[in-house]
Length: 400
Length: 79
Image (cartoon, rainbow over all chains, first blue to last red; front, top):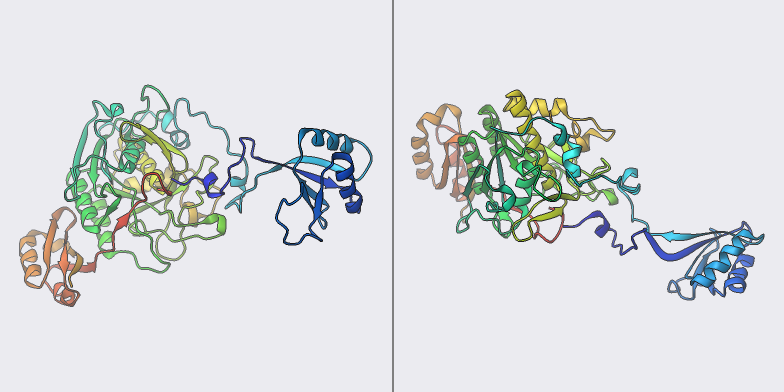
């Protein structure tokens, strides 16, 4: 997976600093300050005015004349001398460690340090959707997860009701990728796995693991529709599809999937699907909800992070086709993974989708709702966010 | 060259699905799966046969299937 830190290309220290220092010079004292850096601490600096194009850091540092700031490398002795100079009258006004900065944050919230969430008992995702406080367990509700299959012998699923089917020619339902096992863990895994955080939203739901993506991670419309038909015939209340194909703005949604989703709803099966990961919000780029989540009758799920900011990759509503309906936790999500690794922490709207499927199962158990009524109750109960509806729809889904 | 095709069937024609499938085959569809639960038939056909498939009684819609789906390698990319 790619995570936001990796996206910045950072290899920062734990404290987010670079090892260099910023020296603030007094107004109108650039020359005097530059001399002082050399005299007091033996730090040689080049000026941006005279060293245009010079490799940074050429000497020990660089003075930004127009800003009145120098960026320097300094050893502890030099630092000590500069600290004394800050306290004394003179051209050196302040000294601070240089922080590692991110290219451009998608939102102000992302720039803030992520709040520390205690995951010793439950994942942050379970807490964000309120699953850990819900009396509902998903018992008696069937969730179909159409994905790369399932490691059904995973020790944390022992004794669970699991039905499997493979729609990939030549491959059993065994998960040779990991994605499917992770999604199933979030939707219906354990709340108390016996070590580590509880990660399953509907922890007593009946699991239907349909393999529609190969071990290499690819699938076709034919296999996916066969998986949906299998889920409908098994009267699953919820189908979770953490899959999709990117579309260009203005591309019509699939008439076939729309009819299929509408028919599934009429028979009491709600299909939730990942909105897609094609946005690059840190660059201001928002790409449309992919296929088949862009169908009006498929519930499209975007991703938020632990600070309730939008995932930088989360697709948005960019035209009249393909609305984001709700959002759920989809950044740094901890869940099950095929043995022997057993667990993994990954990001994507693929991880947000099974949170919604799990919450839908809890609501269905608590209220008896299914089909369109279940869709309505998911929207009704979602916690509204101070973010654009085109990105988050009705907000973060909430357990009953 | 034949391409993957998705065919949806009118709700009213579901009772006679077998006849619809037979008519689609005659009109050039190589049937892959018949999915009565969602009134859908998947298969493959020449693009030139699409008009004939649409003309089959009981057919609701005919659509070329998408190029497929893929998720990144488990160690790479946002999933």
